[in-house]
View 1: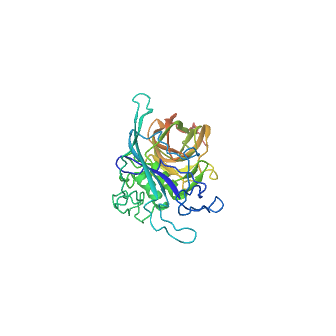
View 2: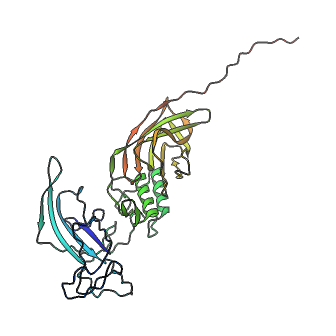
View 3: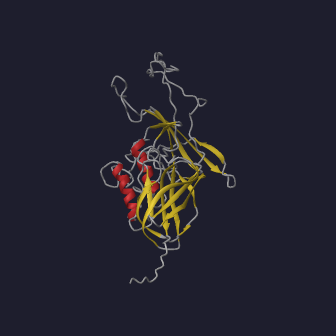
Length: 368
């Protein structure tokens, strides 16, 4: 029923920044002549009365820790979706459902600390793309207003869905991904398994997922985040020239894994299978037929657990071995449980050894 929204200097909302923790609406004061009748047991606000959420209450904040220096507008608004009350009645006007404060700050050039915080008493209105002050209508990823194109909707069905995640994976394997504001979900300038993973997270969890930190919107497309405290190593663990496969091992002591994308060298891939217990992580890896790329993303809430020693991840059956050794040649992205990227390390390669063959020696035998 209430939220905080931060707008940048260009009037663009920053939905990943604001947060509002509400737990009760009641008649806390009636300075405008109303008679208090609502409590936490029977919530509401009487005409002429008001409720106060003091700044000292927990979770009444906007976290600007990672917000760059600049000028901003903070808006507090209630019933922004214009919902009716329990009796089905709508408000007569929504003009007084919001309040704003404008401020600016700078960053110390050395430490990056916030400095020179200042309030701006001349706070201009921020209009949405339909010209409504502090309205909720925003252009879509293609620039249409009102928005009609759903971000990540690769098949143009009108909504992001699991077939779009499949299409992301297919485009990655075929090198067919087209980078645009509607497809590059993490804004890193390329189509990778991270785009597929965050799309799958939006489809599975939705905008109102409740976790240990509160309510999280998985359908807000954040810029690429690399967690410097998480590192994942991929290495070649086994080459079996008799059965024609190569095993890739994973070492991830810092984080769980939602999705991965990597390339190998020294072989051409025929097929791939997961070596992770499907009860733990049931996503099906895919590979480029006759190529060298492997990609995999979970469509649900299952994740690869932390492994503290190199553990079999996938088995790659090959058409041919093309060199003296097989390596993980590139780790494109590893996606952790927060749908952020990790640091990566390419582990050991493995030399190719030909299978042993028994030697037979023939001698002439004379039969009389």
